[in-house]
Length: 236
Image (cartoon, rainbow, N blue to C red; front, side, top):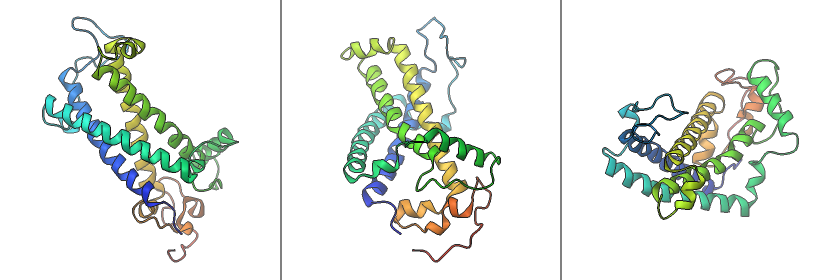
């Protein structure tokens, strides 16, 4: 069966590349001033003030280079995100990605399965409730990252926005927090794909997917029954 339109597949991979560049270059920018307190002061909510992140996690080579990469990737991410959101809205695919009635109940059922409390994978369709929740939150976190980024990029021109964030230093903190949440969601997504549904990689590359290999059919938890029952049918 065909699972993902080529527009969804293309924007997914462009987004992955742009987000990787933004995270790496953003960490390089952070290392130029590792912390959020004004000079000579302390910051209430960051115990690692003055502690730089490992250099291997950064991208851009130097502060100026990292800034250029960061801003370039930002526009790619924004434009690509608008194309993606516009497409799924017009194409109707947004219905597969938003929480539906009974979301809390379904999310608890999935959590119980992953925690080995229940034995059978809940039947929740193309995306389970936990996936729907993550996919629904992602655009809002991305928007928060862009808005807080603009507040620290143009703190004079957009002074009202920076002030709304609590000032320049708080805006940096919120921007870093939004980025950290994006990293957590992205890593969680990659982990679950590799550990539960590696067959979905094919769907995001070619669009094809065999429903017989779905986690529901295999009763699959992370790294458990990865190739298990029932015997997969021939690929569609």
